[in-house]
Amino acid sequence: MQVPPFSLSEQLQGLGAALDQAVLEVLRSGQYIGGATIARFEQDFAEACRVPHAIGCNSGTDALILALRGLGIGPGDEVITASFSFFATAEAISAVGATPVFVDVEESSYLIDLDQLEAAITPATRALLPVHLFGRPVDMERVCAIAERHGLKVVEDCAQATGASWAGRPVGSWGDVGCFSFFPTKNLGAAGDGGAITCRDAELAQAMRELAVHGMPRRYLHTALGYNSRLDAMQAAVLNVKLPHLPRWVERRGAIARHYREHLAALSGVALPELGPDGHSWNQFVLRVPRCAAAQACADSGVSCTPAADSASFGLPEACCRDWLKQQLQDAGVSTIIYYPIPIHRQPAYADLGYGPGSLPVTERLCTEVLSLPIFPELSGEQQQRVVEVLRTVVAQPLIVA
Ligand SMILES: Cc1ncc(COP(=O)(O)O)c(C=O)c1O
Picture 1 (tube, rainbow, N blue to C red):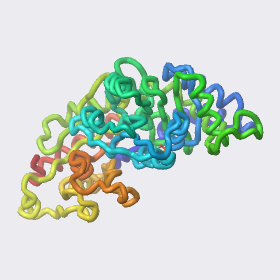
Picture 2 (cartoon, helix red, strand yellow):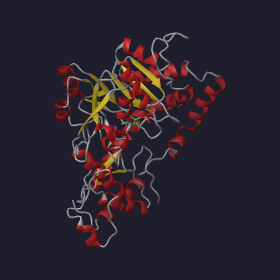
Picture 3 (tube, rainbow, N blue to C red):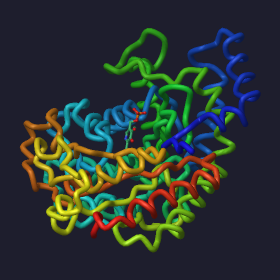
Picture 4 (spheres, rainbow, N blue to C red):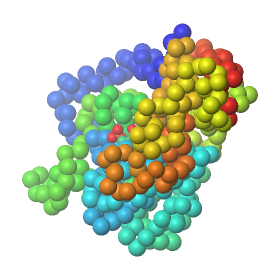
C-alpha cells in the first residue's frame, strides 16, 4: 500500500459536483476579477475568523506583504519572527524593506520562544510576527501583552493554521492583521494560489484592500504604490464550496494526530509532537528523530546511514538518522516530507544578515530531526495503520537511539 504525504483525490471526488458547478458558474458569468463570488467568500471567511474584515489576495506571501505595508512597516524597521518557518515569512519582511530579526523556537512546541522574542526587542522593532507553525497556535494572549507593553504591531502568520484557535478565539483575530494562505496543501486549499488578510480595524482593512489593487481607492486614482494581488473569482468559487467543510476537516486532522500519538507512543527512538492546546489545526504531524547518541552507532550497525549532504554545508548538525528513517519509510511505501531542512537564517539569501552556525541552536537542530507523517482529512484508517506499522517495524531496529 502506498501512503502519500498529501492527497486531494478523495476530497475532489466528494466535492466534485459542487466544485464543477461553482467553477462553471464563474466561467460562464464572465466575471473573473472582483464581484459577488469574492465578496461572499470574504464575508464568510471574516465570519469564520470572527473579525469584521477579510480581504482576499493572491497568496499567503502577499497577505504578509500587504499586512506589513498596511501597518506602515518599511526600511529601518525590525520585525521579530521565527526562522523555523517557510521562507515566505521572512521574505515578506524583506520585501517591504524591513529587517527580519530571528529568534529561536521551543523544542517542545516548535513555536517561537516568547521569552527570547521579548528579549530581542530593540528601539527599531515595529512588529512581532508569530507563526502558527504546523497549525499549532502560538500563545496569542502573551504575544499581544508583549506587543502592548512595547507599543508594537502584531502580524499573525496563519498560513498553516486556518481553522485553528487560541483560547477559543480563531487565529487571525488576535493580532492587528492575520495572514492566511490557500495554497492547495493548506487546511483550506484553493485550486491554485490564494490568500487572505483578516483584521478588526476598518481603516487598516481599506488601506490593505487598496494596496492589493495598485494602491487604487477608486478607478485610476493611485494614492500609493501597491501590488496586483487579488484573489480571483475562480479561486473564491472553490473556496466557497470548501469553507463550510473546514471545521470537520480540522476535527479529522486532530483525530488522525491523536491516533498517531496513541499508536506510536511506545516508540523510544522518535519524539512525537505534543498534542498542544485545544485549537491546534494539525496542518502537519511533525515528529523528531534525534541524532544517534553516538554517531558511531550508524557505522556499527552496518546500515547505510550517512549525514545528509546538505547539512554540513549549511553549518547544521548531521541529519543522518532522520534521513535514514525517511528512506526506510519511503522504501515501504510511506512518503514523508521534511518541513524544513534548512532554517531561514542559514539560507544563502540571508547570508548578509550574519547569523552563523549555532546562532539559533534549537531551530538548527530541529531542521536535522523533523519528519512529517502523512496527514490530511481523507487519510483512511487503513493508511494510518500502515504508517504506524511501518514506523514500528523500522524504528524497532537498533539503529535509532534517542
Ligand atoms: C508559514 C507560512 N507562511 C507563509 C506562506 C506563504 O503562503 P503562500 O504559499 O500562499 O504564498 C506559507 C506557505 O507555505 C507558510 O507555510
